[in-house]
Length: 192
Image (cartoon, rainbow, N blue to C red):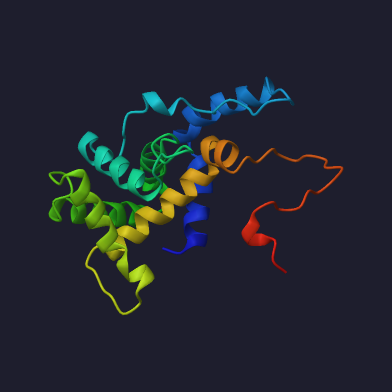
């Protein structure tokens, strides 16, 4: 599945009847929007119950995404409820892209066969690092690379389109009229 296909799928998934629980609070939040603060998160992801993945698989996905975007001095994938968003999108794909559900089923089956569930935190980190090695070393191969790519692509998309990723981490302030454009203050960017 290409990035364009994934974008199209997410857009279509959001228009289905399954998207009503997500869109209703989001539209209501828009009506009470204040211009001096970021809008509230459109959905209470903390109470989300998986619809496509089992509770155990959802937990694995949450652990995997937290390795990819950990919480440190800034929020991470777990803070943005990335695993819940992925479950929401994959569940909604049933109508428009059932092959996507097959890809995710294969990915979770690979995690199961690789022993991700029983692994310690260090072993999980090592497994994710090994599965992602071909991304950095094009001569390397790994049987879990397709799973790594699938989860990573959706994790990045989900995180940086969430309120946590976009507003809290990237500090996006929306369409704003700027009267000045201050220069970058990072020392490594001061060289011309």
